[in-house]
Length: 356
Ligand code: NAD
Ligand code: MN
Image 1 (spheres, rainbow, N blue to C red):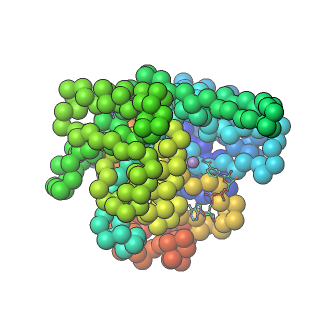
Image 2 (image 1 turned 90 degrees about the vertical axis):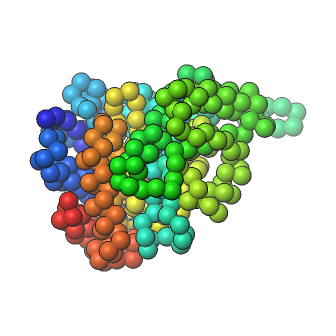
């Protein structure tokens, strides 16, 4: 049997309503899995900043590093006006823990999208470089100001993100095989714009190709697509994709777009992943417009719990959660208001727990 220690970082707003749901579903997993959990409550976010002067206290980082196997992060509010000393704690956490991949599965459930064919894809976004190194400068010229930004692409980061995409494609194939789903085969699509950016995106493309040509990936089909035509096809034929790997900026844009394909922001999970550590995090923010009313959709968080478990090699436990969530959505009796229902957060959670 295995005990996993999980850091719980609710953050602000509805983070405090959905993270307790994440804890409850972990506690409700059947004993027969041989898996148990211990939890440690950790602080981060805007309220923490107002209270302590730090949005990400060192204690939170140290505890995650020293004690935890994984973590759940809710959401944080960012001040609407720039506030001295404040910067996003999740961005800092990704850096401090070297969580180099942002993984976002996008999956439709019957009756919840306008697309006839099931959508089941995952976007694997590089999380450390590209234009997000934020090395910008502005200078004056005869014709006014000019601003420039560095787009940095490295072999190391491109290779490890492509390797992770390949691993995810293999794992998804294993799950499909073990649950008797046929029809789709393991595929990774490399996203780039190397027709224009031959050096930066060219390096990403070539390095990803090489990484995915390794023998462990021989069962994975690899193709590639220029990012703009990818957006077109993603919106026309989302059912054709399996795993998409992309540099930071394209991955950011593609993943918000893809989330729109499946109904509600309240459904879409993510995980920040590094070597041997994963933080599950719903894609939505702190939703101040609905906080404190017990009406936030908990499903993005519950799916983020499952995603975290997958990266901690607990696929069986993850599959149980996914299945219970899908059953709740398919039946449609206990849906939160964002899904057109009237159920409270806690009622959605209880319905899903009953199905476990
Ligand atoms: P948001 O995701 O918080 O909300 C957008 C809309 O979706 C709102 O109408 C909200 O009510 C709804 N919504 C979001 N999650 C929902 C859920 N689980 N169930 C039902 N409805 C849900 O985005 P925003 O309004 O642009 O930002 C609000 C705050 O969150 C800001 O301070 C922003 O900086 C922050 N934010 C944080 C993160 C993060 O922590 N990763 C991400 C995005 C935004
Ligand atoms: Mn984004």
